[in-house]
Length: 246
Image (cartoon, rainbow, N blue to C red; front, side, top):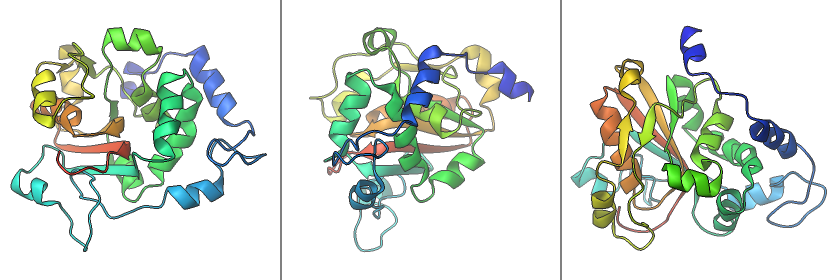
């Protein structure tokens, strides 16, 4: 109980409104059906089927393998990586609404998709903390909210702690960079709050983000969490870019 009060989430009118708005009936954002929730059951069944993925980078796999060749040759810092969806139609458009059009009410239905993904719920239940990948102050000011923080809170508000991992700088825009360039760009981007290192030492954590493209951001965040003493680290993302390479 003491741990929960130490990292309690401040009351937010926007978060309260978003949670209320997410429960209202509306058109399905994918098929336009009415009345429905933001995502109707038919579209979830059609576009959100689980698929075999590498257990440590979440790239789609075929043939029953557990890990992709890259992860076998270069073991990642993550013990597991879970992705609910491919970053493709219709989810790329849904994420654009969530992130870039100021619509944080998407967090609740998208978090339900994440939690229903195989192995996600056991990972959340076993974790001491859900740690959202932080945005830089500049990006946070532009967007008004951190989508990863909203997802973590919707997944498990009691364990979500957006202040354990800090973003020190954003670096250059990463959209056109290779993985190696992204890793260089992210050097020194993250740090653990030095006053809260004891909250991580010897603990299990789930690192939460919305999209995993090359894995560079999660790798950089995982480095500092491992250095802080996290003993088991899972990444849980909404969407994985279905491309070769890391």
